[in-house]
Length: 568
Image (tube, rainbow, N blue to C red; front, side):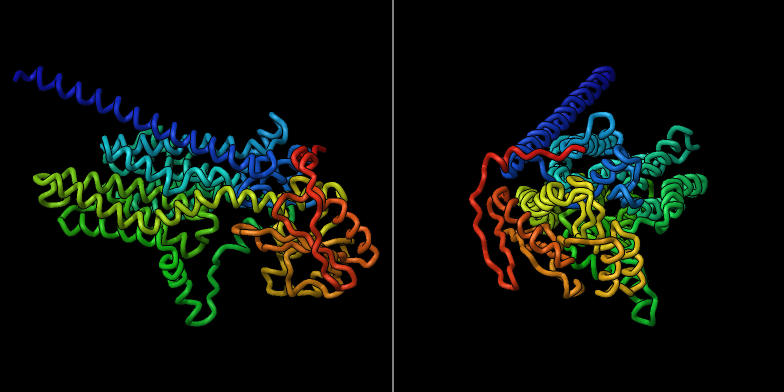
């Protein structure tokens, strides 16, 4: 065969591989689009023709965005500044609300677009790493199903944008790590800009930045470390200074209240802060534990076979380090979202490293025995899929029910308060939907939207006396809360709403209490009036003179399905 013939066959193979990989991408995007559309339609029908998100937190961002547009206030309420845990997502929502009007569809459409973009980046990552054929299809399918991309779209939050940015940061980092020559300006700025955006989307991106710095240090890329570190700090410092200027802590209150900030108080505290907390959480998160174990084993295998760490297997170090930092200082496993970016990242890096090791002699004897590659890859998939498949199945199965929970509880709370208490002071401990649907002066009993409560919670001085005093100062007339031992005993229970099959709400039953005796009759009448519009499955009970009576209202189908989001 002539040299030109060999070259022609090679060129033809590349063209065919390119066409096949693009077909893989098109198929993945088609399946993803159909799944999102189908799930959205099912949720829409299940929730009386409303688009509802699976978490109340989504409405916190939407409330802040609405207040930015309507009142110029970066806050959950128009009266108080609140720095969200994802400031860039909130600003993006505000921009679209201003351009197209306040709409509940916007977060879902954004998430759909960012999910599709993340799939595109995974495809590009895999193709550039030499993954072809079935391997590329498995990577795309596993990333969509196991991350899980589709349910995350229905959280209405920033997690798919975060996954997209983390993948971009890792892709640009990989390109720099495998390149030993001088760094081009475009490559450096691509990494730095994506780093700054990733941190502005979620502060947990700092874990990836710290891990990337270790890999860059191994390649002696000191300039890149310094510039990327500075870019990562820009959004934190910018939003932090804005928060302090408005009387808030430098970091978002949600991170201070929900994060795992080390408390060094004796030997036990020191041990926990040095990694024991993280190890404990990792072991209790089996899908993340298995992925991390696979990353460590692959890195060890490379070193055991005499390969020095290079740009590709340094990514294993990056993901393991980022995971270790996350489980030590942040949370996992609240509706599959907090650690989703680590799952997506681990799946991509594992696929790239496995393909590289098996295709270039990393596994002795594999090149002569291709069946060993197939068997080994199959075994690895089974090991990975055992915990991941359970998590993914739960995510897809629970999404509709989660949106239904929010519609039956928080969404109805918002509609109720908009109708009867708009513009009035209210105490609550789930503040997203109620502030999006109504204009309230809320005393947030969890502290996310009320700086006094946040300060007392962080100081350890939060008590019934504090709640009583803050309620008196703010003129609170009613409270819509989950029952708590901290609630003042003089607050009178007037009624409750109870939902079934609760998987995401903070409590199955939400209680309506009158903070003032003069409000008892009004609140009871309002609850009775609204009861005919409650969705199916909500059981409401009224309390009269301490006696709880269950009511079964006649459902008003037309009034329930015709309700729309209040506009101001």
